[in-house]
Image 1: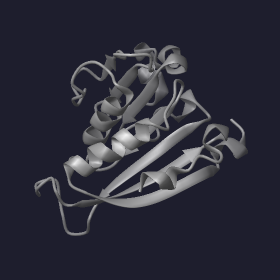
Image 2: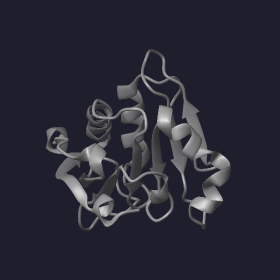
Image 3: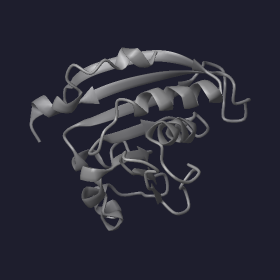
Amino acid sequence: MSQLSEAPVSTASFTVGGAERMREAGRRLAALLRPGDLVLLTGPLGAGKTTLTRGIGEGLGVRGAVTSPTFVIARVHPPLGGGPPLVHVDAYRLAGGLDEMEDLDLDVALPESVVVVEWGEGRVEELSEDRLHVVIRRAEGTDAGDAGDEERKVTLTGVGARWQGIGLRLLD
């Protein structure tokens, strides 16, 4: 991979208050996504990664309830209309990198799907030089046991030519 492809080309940060706002951020993000996009979600347990993905699924118009795929590792949500399928992966239980995820055939699914990987940082970047990193952090002083309505800071970082000139700030 070239050094140029590792450099962020588009960034944005914003604050989200509550689960419904996180879902809305996901719906707005879905409007920017297209087949072949790889989205990596990072944040502590309970940060809102699955809630954001639920909004992405709603925005893409996919079939099935988007829930955490922790125990099945990956779920494919086919489109209800003409959009791309959503492949939702939870890499939390996977200790290794891309080699351990090879059985999921993400490289095969990626060209025609939007692939969202929770806990994907450091595990699946090799799938694509073009990817969107989403980091979700809770407000200071909160933890996973707190109510789901506290504020979160969401930082989006587009990497690669795909994200050049994409207005991620529009999601704020």
